Image 1 (cartoon, rainbow, N blue to C red):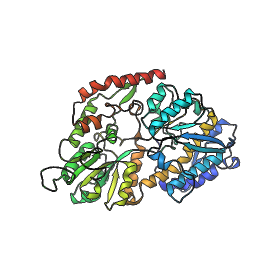
Image 2 (cartoon, one colour):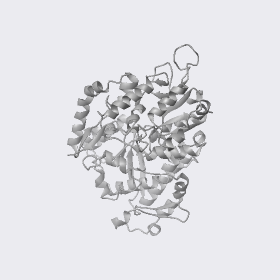
Image 3 (spheres, rainbow, N blue to C red):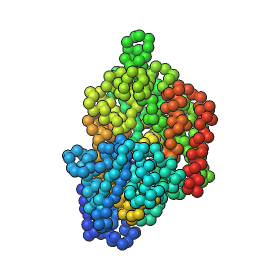
Image 4 (cartoon, rainbow, N blue to C red):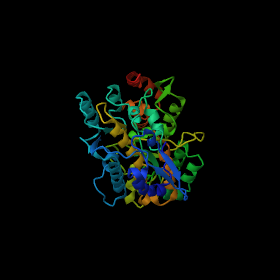
Length: 484
């Protein structure tokens, strides 16, 4: 996993990139020697780590590095910038682009045709038409991901590694890249160029004090922040405020969540994956005692008492965020971390927490990363240029957009305590992906928590599994066969 702990020190390294990745003389690299593309690092007298540019200065004659992307969430706001505006994130993106373009004499060219459903047809059109139209494709985390593999439309990233990509360096996400590999091949990759998109739990500090509850930060630090603990604390604050005998949007709750896709992060926080690699092949690994227990725990939290307020689009007569911590009637808010900026306009004091663990014995706090993925169509011809530009964007992102994005998440209300920054580090350090979630499309088994437990209010996981397993195994067999 990529570990980026010292935001201040890393921001300072942006200046170093201008020199370490400057002229050939400054970097002291020979463009003809592939061995010089191996990264090195040094520690300065003040303890800050200085990174030496791993990419030899090159001249690709202003060639366009064409990036196909969907108009989806983080891509819309945090990937491309035409000019400096004074906004920290925008200017970090602009600086990354400037350094990369000048170092390699390339031109980054973003291309979009609309929302996430446009990506697969455009890749298909290019590949079947033999058109070298795109050098890098940024995808959704699920839509079209598996089918582009089974159709054999994607270049193996190992081919690009031979041309200059260093997958074993920190600017490539080793954990995610290994889980996304298929029989040694890499149709998709994730580097520091891709911003993390995990979910998190926010908590209302005022309610913690009012109800004299345990300090959530201390629970995280001592390893006792579990789903059982969250459920216990949620029950302690729930109340029928208006006394009408009906729990609705006017009452007080311990836990609030949109009953949709985000809930399916929960099994990963418990170290439960959909697919695991066994004996050289990939198998569904979801029917376990732990998964049955997770379903039961979530049913207790969501449906077993009046401690949770769950809503979906167009139900309960409310829109998203009507039940929020800003009302001081919600203790824990389940959110996409990048959506936490909603609370900037609110007066409520709150903190950030990673997802709870399954139990105290679990060692790490784990967060599913809902970020998009990177791929290269088989018709992309300029392999060396693509490899070096992709490597340069990954390396440069480590000290430009990555720390700037964390600063965005910690702006305003979120910056009021040091613990919030530490919690964000824990969340980002614990990000994972899953072969099953990313490759097997939207289906009932991959979305068990949101559909079986939250929507259907059921704990009958055995019947649910037996009803849906054939579809999942057929999709998995096609993926295994594509790259055998």
